[in-house]
Image (cartoon, rainbow, N blue to C red; front, side, top):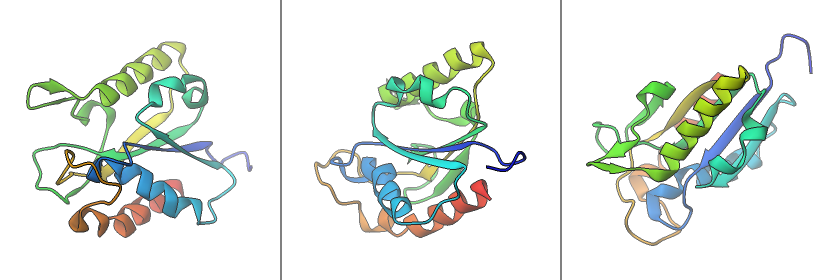
Length: 153
């Protein structure tokens, strides 16, 4: 790794068996087949990003791939800063996002928290048990991959 290259982590999160909640998982499967630069690590962690603070800590940059329930219509691609990530949806806490944000806050205290960006889509269906994405969300994978490549180069 060259001195000016950042140590980057792509963290794909979500539940692969709950329709659009598996978006991060499906993106990770595409990224696994690509030749990523040596300074980029890829991890697919399901909903348990809280378990890996030691992997996050000390990275220069982290890109989190997931679904984000913003006020935009389903299928909208979003790029969010940590403070923009919706942790509460319709009055209910998104536990996985809450835990990830808490983990990032704890790492910040050590001074070793990576510059973090969140990329994903607004989901259409996060209730149906299925390993398949809805067609309108699946169609967004190539554009999200393009955004990720822009972030790491």
